[in-house]
Amino acid sequence: MASRDLQLILVSLYSYFLESILLPAQSLARGRSYHRIRRFLETSQWWSAEQLRDFQWQELTRLLTIAFCSVPFYQRKYAAAGARLEDIRTWDDFQRLPPLTREEVNQHREELFPRDLTVRRLPHATGGSSGVPVRFYRTWQSYDWRLAATHRAYSWSGCRQGERTLYLWAAPLASQSFASRLRERAHAFLHRRLMVPTWLQNEALWERTYREALRFRPRFLVGYVSSLLNFARYLESRQLHLPTLRAVLTAAEPLPASVRGFLSQVFRVPVFETYGSREFMSIGAECDRHQGLHLNVENLVVEIASPDPDGYGDILITDLHNLGTVFIRYAIGDASRLASRPCSCGRGLPLLEPVERRVADVITLPGGRVISPIFFRHVLKEIPEILQYQVRQESPDRVVLLLVLARELSASSQSRLRAELGTVLNDTEFEICVVPSIPLGPSGKLHSVVAFRGPQPDPEPGGIPLE
Ligand SMILES: [Zn+2]
Image 1: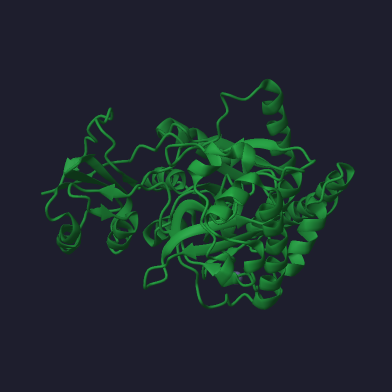
Image 2: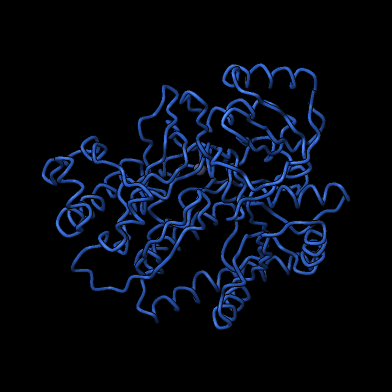
């Protein structure tokens, strides 16, 4: 027990050293602002909602002035929409500006930054989980904001920098140069991270991961939901356990309540959902009250565009500090709703409800009928046996639902599933298949809805058809 206590003290000391001395010193020596922003964010999270809103407005008006006066793309786009800077006096005025699409970012990349920008632009790209990678630029200033926001968001689960953390990550290792691999290794060593690439998942990978984890003794486990789920199923089937874990953090994919329950049962620790993207890094994360995802509003404005009667709608994001590519009201391709209540932890940061759609297509049926991915989420989240699903439109009028189950579907779940899906797919052939696992998309994420795009090269799923 005494040696365990000593270990915990040493861990805290190392985290303290890294967070309070080494990282700030590094930032200072490089002439960067990470250390200042990180300190600011520690304080501002406890501001009132009004104070945070005022801060956002001040940063937003500064950004809009730049966009209207010196970013060629916005000058043209907003002029065509009849929008003038002097007309934007309230949040409602701002919300009338036309959104930015990912196609626009790709097509007008060289017109999306201020003409007089003097700082370096650092190229970056998304993983292309929606089919097309988005290429954009960041500045060091914006990188410092997003890194500080990410570190704060992780700290809400207790995962501070320097804590031993195991990452199940779809990290692209092959295309990197020797120097950048070396740099990454040094970084992982300093931050005490064990990175396990999960592009290709099979028994051998999980066996190796488990063995390495026992040696590494992680206190935190971070991963894509699908990777965590597959690892948990491996551990459960062999009755294995990682005794040093304190929390699991999920990323990159939606976290249905059934999966959260399963992960916390297998790993025997609380599960924290986080929401982020390559374009912005951390957007939001749960604190220990698990009442929603606290948004990083000092760096981002997160809005819901044309919400439905329940408040759900597409998420639009404005990055307040990235002049490398100016994102204003960017349609990120996910949907959710804002919670109206504050969190009981006392932070003024508003809450986003769990994100409803990620890496999902809209299905168009013959005759032009369109089904939103939100429909499937709503129906399938009510079926307790379902761990993962994928809706595949195999041909214009044939839809297959692949299911990974925690246990066999009960008769009532089966009839409920058929009845609910039948309300929308009544004139379409649809089949339900139980499969052992669902292959991940090219970005390493699970695609929950895949629309028909012409002849499909994929083989048949090979599941067990349900009657
Ligand atoms: Zn909270």
